[in-house]
Image 1 (cartoon, rainbow, N blue to C red):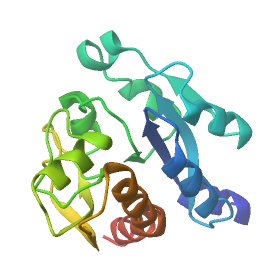
Image 2: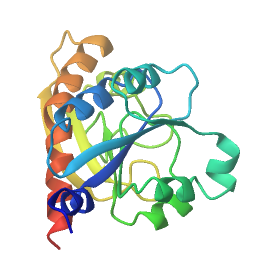
Image 3: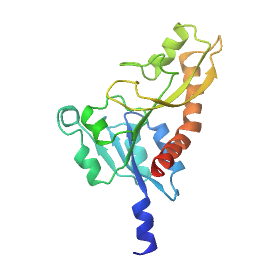
Length: 202
């Protein structure tokens, strides 16, 4: 077997699922651009016109626009992902709950980032600005990010990593979002890399 073929076989291909602007997706793509063992091979999006699709096009990453019916009542695009040799899934601002078919097809190989310190401020409808508004309304002293494995429930899977920031008295949902985004950009790509490395050596 030629050396480059062996390297290709070891390459972990990841899919990024996103619903919005794709700022985290852009940083993940950039982080793994020249990585010897991990490659962003697909962007999956459920919203036509979402910014993440523009990022995928600009970065020459294939994109898959999914629909609700086959996702929740069909095979959850498992066959499509397997055909594309996806081995790991990263949720980066993806707002649909992951169906059981997908969780079972990728056991322990789907992770999500949530803009709060779970188990606080998680669950259906708790995303983006709604999370930061709830943190301020509850007079929390700190907030942050939680990176966790994904199961069939919203924001419920085993935590992998958390990072915190202080909530200042004059913070607004907008200023808090900026602080939390900085944590996401700093930590998410590195944690993805660490989780995949650990799984490869099991």
